[in-house]
Image 1: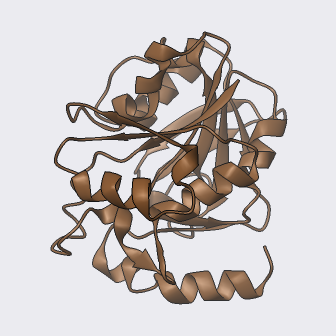
Image 2 (image 1 turned 180 degrees about the horizontal axis):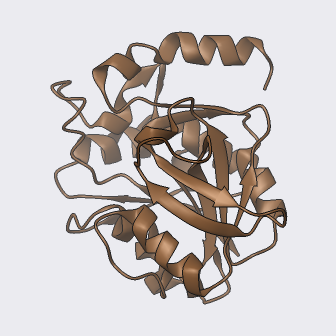
Amino acid sequence: MKYGSIPAGGLGTRLQPIGFSKELAPVARRAVIEYLIERMVLAGIDKIFINTAEDKSDLIRYLSTKSIYKDNLIYMVRERKGLLDGIVCPQAFLKEDDELFFGLPDTIWYPKDGFVQVGKQRGELVLGLFDTGTPEKFDSVIINSNNKIESINVKIPNPKTKWTWAIGKMTVKVARHLRPNPLFGVSMNEYCQKHDGFAVEIAGSSCLDIGIPDDYEKAESFVKSNSNSNI
């Protein structure tokens, strides 16, 4: 089976003070996390883990009572351990061949069928790559002509590619093999140096991380411009 997994335990210190969990930051009259949930549901993923921390009760309260996706969500409340744990923690309850589709709750990206495209690529680890326009700020991913990942480089100056990952899928088997590291991109790169990992370049893509105030200010116009382009 396929499940969604959203790491929503971060403190959001770059965006504070906003007075509430960053995943609830409103963009075009929606909580930003709902853009990611929507895209998972559009790909047929109807069971989505929200992996969060005890002090983020406002997020749980909103999603469980006011979100139109409330019936699709499963909550895991645990000690805050970082991005890797926030993505893979549902594996404890799943089978090895189950798939976890994941993304980041403070990003908005187009086209909306990104998870559909990732799902079509065969492989136990598959990343969806987007053109953010600023690959040096993210994890840039180099692939070969067969879509196999050659390297994942975490926030390096002058990266060799414009493509950065924003979403992905992995089997529970892979989730159990990833070695802990504070940087999730490093864990994935270590895995891909020993095992096959793949990536899909999402054509015509755009992606915005609202994690800092300057980028959050761009969010409304970003959604409006992409919605008008029907992607």
